[in-house]
Structures are given as structure tokens and as C-alpha cells.
Length: 385
Image (cartoon, rainbow, N blue to C red; front, top):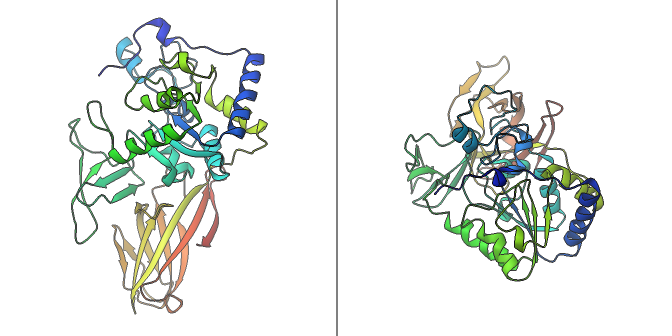
């Protein structure tokens, strides 16, 4: 299915005059305040400011990432142009990403539907229970046999063929051990049933559906905002290019998503939080002298975060290095230090966690939340949760 823009009119970018934008944003802020079930829908346009190119921007786009992937292909544009480009793993969530996190935390935003595969919504701290990633996540793989999900701090897809999704890894559940598959949805493939059903259910409940940075040309995803409009509820679209749903939108805003969301948050009297990378470390004493170290996401799903773990006994015993999960340790001493080595996409330094085996209870998990500031380039907190 070809959904690329073909005419110059489709590629054209529109901008509201400052006074018009001010009036529209004031109206949007009031809609958010009075909504009972506010749902947001995001596309590639919310990630261009992070350095991730979109698909449909024209050759003359104002975006710092330059022409979209399909425009480059159509125009035979090489990658030598001096456009800003960041890998998905190193991209820092945009002000729009972080505004959505805050709106969900305080109770305004009830659900978020995303077409993006860059993983930035989950990394930003957005609640996974209130998120549907319709087209998958480059960092997420699933077991088709038991349904278990695994997040990784690396790109999970490694298949060469478009419709081959096996990653070569296996489910860690001893009773299952099924094959794992990347979660990316390519053209011609069905959307994940759970996310699809939840997206439509939330859209039907919605009295305010805010579309951010989507061309709304890929179905069935684009049918979700349309569902809200068909019910006679409010549909607001923020995008630079025209969309097929503009004619049924309650409000159409022609501006950059970040610019709009900064203005909205100011009118709501809310700050946009600084992005902080959160990592959850789990310790479990599995015997009198046995320790398992793992990591999880905020919804307790497994999260592969460590490149390696070193066990430091000081001068008492030589250091031990573990290179692969599961990280099972038979310590040579009751007290020692764990040196956690991350993949370092944001420059994270190793983190040391002091362990006292005598203070741990057998088969009881102890969880730590450690936070890293990419802006300050340092770990800023560690607490037991």
C-alpha cells in the first residue's frame, strides 16, 4: 500500500499566523480542561525535533531532519545533505513527548495511541498501561506462544526479509521457551489485536481526540480519530501538511507540535518535565548464597538493560564479570559491589550498587529505581521502590 505524498499540494506545509495560533491554542487548552475522556494520537511529526526523520515531508520542508524517507526515495536524494539525524536509541524525547507524560500523570490525558516505532513514548516515562503502539516498537519483542513481552535497550529486529520477524532469541519462561519475534508492523501485516481493539475502544469513549504530527493516511490507525469525530465529539489536528480528516476536525492547527504543546502547557499552568532516564534494577536472593540480578520496565515487564555486570569484592577476591543475562551470581563474600554497565546511548556511566547478602530475604525481590539526567550527564538518584 503506497501512502506517500505525490502532489506538491499534499507536500506543502502550512503555518498559522501568530495571532491565529494564539487563539487556537487558547481554545485547545480550554478543551483539555473541560474534557472527560481526552485521548491523543501521535505520528512521526512529534519525533522530528529529536532528530528522527519522518516519511512524507517534502523536499523543501522546514524540518531540521530534511525530506521524509519516501520523498528522498522519490527524488533520489542522498544522505549527504546536512540535515539533523539521530538514531532512535540516542534520541531524547521531545517537549511534546514530555508534555504528554505530564498530562497523563495529572489525569487530563486518559490514553495515548501512537503510530511511531521509535520507542520514545515508553522511554519518556509514559505509562505503558495507557499506551497503544499500533505499529510496534523497535525495542520490543514478543513471544507468540505465551504472549510475554521483552523490552531491550537495543534494536531487536535483525531479520533480512520484510515479513520475517524472528529474532533468534527464546522466551525465558522455562515452561515456554518459545521463539521471540520483533513487534514491528510492516505494510500488509495485521496490527496487534490488543492495541487495535484498545485504540478503537478509547477513541469511541473520547470526547476530545488530539492528533499530533500525523498525516492520517495509514489505516486502520487513522480510522481511530475518525471514530471520535463520527460520534460528534471534538477532533483537533496539529500538523504542517493537510490530512484527509481536516474537513471533519473541530479545530485544525498549522504549526510545529513542540511549539503548540509548549503554549498549551503554559496556558494550563503546567511545567513540561525534563526528560530523566529511569532504570529499574531487581535483586532476588534465590538461596542462602545465590543472587539473581535483572531489570524491568515500569509495568514489570522484563527489560534487557545491562551490557555486562561486574562483581567487585574489593581486595578480598578477584573481580567477576558476567556478560550475558540471566545474571546469576554465587558471591564469594557476603558483602560486595555490583558494577552495572549499561549500553550508554545517553552516555550513562557504570553504576555501583552495594550489596549485603545478609540483609536480603530469600525469594523476595528488592527493586531499585535509579535515574539518569542526559542533560547533566550523570546519575542523579537511587531509591528502593
